[in-house]
Amino acid sequence: MNNYYKKYIERTFYLAKKGQGKVSPNPLVGCVIVNKEKIIGEGYHEQYGNDHAEINAIKATKNNELIKNSSVFINLEPCAHHGKTPPCVKELIKLQPKEIIISNMDPNPKVNGKGIEILKNQGIKVVCDVLKNRGEKLNKRFFTFIRKKRPYIILKWAETINGMIANKKNESKWISNKLSRQIVHKWRSYEDAILVGASTVEHDNPRLTVRNWKGQNPIRIVIDPKKRLSNKKNIFDKSAQTINLFEMNQNNVKEVMGSLKKKNILSVIVEGGAYTLNNFIANKCWDELRIFQSNKIFRKGIEAPKIDKKNLDYVNVLDNKLFIKYNEED
Image (cartoon, rainbow, N blue to C red; front, side, top):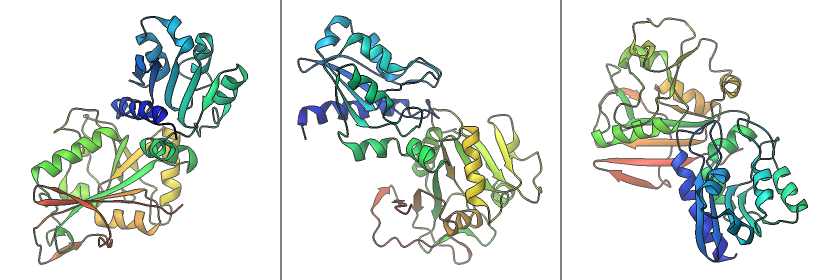
């Protein structure tokens, strides 16, 4: 594949990531305009409801007449429909770039090849599928949301080296270290929602907010089918929106997660407890596991979900190990 194309598509990935935690339920998109191997304009989708990456890149170009002889790189097919903003293909057609290079076709039925077709019909060369797999990984939340009609689901927990998620008093706090907890707050700022079961709220009384990182608090979701939680718990304060899933049980996990699509919740990070995590695993309703393992030992307590870590890669976070696994099942 043309290394010239790869080079600037890589740049669109870098720019697109700047929109993490700010553009949902839209995808992460970056755009780079190149003339004679020099970047003359670039931008990314910065905030949901605001201009898309292509428009920001065009605005950043000092001389728009140069775009006619330029290459435009975008990690996702430009939109061809009216949403919060006008279709980007119309603005690109006005400027008549010599070619447009794209990493991924947009799976949204409102687009899904229509933008590419319109551009080609206007005589503009379009190159597709440059670093396609990396582009899909970048927008894994958006692609899952469209294709599976549910949020991208991340299961996260911390466990002791002997596989315990809480001690015999059902206390799970401080298995991980300070840096690990800060990383979790960073993760929360990137996801639309965070989910826990009623038992976790009863025993830990968590806030489930982004306190140790700069970013937006996720929507808090609690599974409470027996309606036993007091409204005095921290999760019901006014620091973030909270949704009660009174109807969710071990038999309808997929159905209830599908219902979150109607609320435009693109991703959910599930933080416990063990019963809730095991329900998601048993129903094969997850996309990614993130597991912190500390050197601590609880002689008795609540066991963590059983996941074979022998073939999993990990990184060290001070005295913790962080394991990450992606669900490759459809």
